[in-house]
Length: 362
Ligand SMILES: NC(=O)c1ccc[n+]([C@@H]2O[C@H](COP(=O)([O-])OP(=O)(O)OC[C@H]3O[C@@H](n4cnc5c(N)ncnc54)[C@H](O)[C@@H]3O)[C@@H](O)[C@H]2O)c1
Ligand SMILES: [Zn+2]
Ligand SMILES: [Zn+2]
Image 1 (tube, protein in one colour):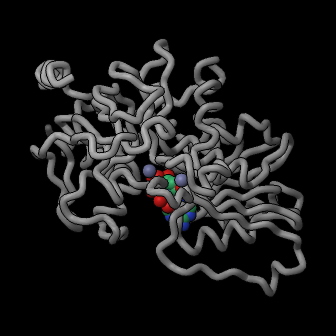
Image 2 (cartoon, rainbow, N blue to C red):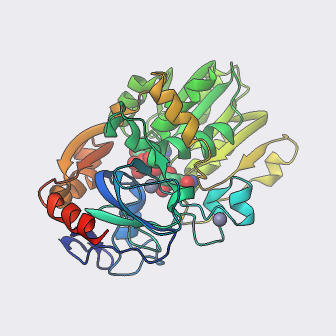
Image 3 (cartoon, helix red, strand yellow):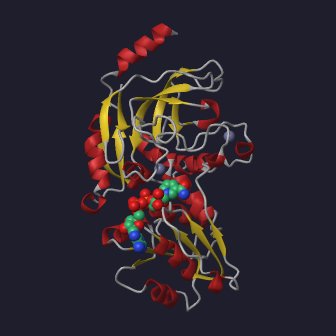
């Protein structure tokens, strides 16, 4: 099969690799029908995630079709259409039993395109298939559900729910990339009184307004603290969501909140940030951090199915899987291409042979 292989910092190649095979009885093999690229894949390519070894197939977001199941898999069968999300769950460890799958200590958590081969490929091996994939209703398109694989549950769980947004709250979201925009989209489910989005790129601020931001602030041009205090009668916002991942934006979020306010950090940080306890200790603030668990994925899927949530505006560019190199170039140059998410569709050409071979093997 073909797959996008990481060969060390700066090096990625769409190349022929061996087909994946069942290794454990709880595995399934999934044909990738739709995949996408994440900002985290770009971090890996910069060498920021040293656990990813050269030779690793990247990607942790896909919609696919089950083509083979291990002997212990009981709830899936070939032909089932499933969401394969960024988080895998062993279903047995303490954290999985608490619904905190991102912290799985039984071999799950974020493993695709990180610790095991990922989903930017024609096929993938999916461990703990019964407890990890989500079966999809037939009437939803891949494009309607693919963003449930990462950005929607991430922003909803680590931003909106961790920040305990309530109806009427004033919310600031710092960073308007896919994660910040998914925070805008899912915050609206809780009817905040007002959403203020801050970014340094005008094109991203324009997107934020399209996604439903009430006010946008270019914090490279205007003093963001003064602007937000102006908008909140000098009090600050109820909730600030950090969706960039640099020290300045975390420190800004801690300044933007009112006494008793909440900062929900979603950004992945590579450098230490300063926590101004000398100012914050008396202000009753709450600061949360986290990796997505995906415990909200079934409910978000339900909202898509009932037409109350439409993530399709995230899809700005479409490619075939075979055009992976071009898709990466487009996604990585978002300043020029205005890309939010690229949608990669599986190439049907090689599939009939593979399916015949699998059927013969069964
Ligand atoms: N916690 C999790 O589970 C999780 C999961 C996925 C992604 N993330 C992280 O979320 C963050 C955002 O992801 P993304 O894909 O949207 O990234 P992105 O790079 O596409 O978007 C970041 C946005 O921040 C803006 N920005 C940069 N510097 C800024 C500044 N000083 N002030 C205001 N805005 C600024 C950029 O213009 C851009 O629009 C990343 O750090 C990513 O790694 C976390
Ligand atoms: Zn991701
Ligand atoms: Zn577990």
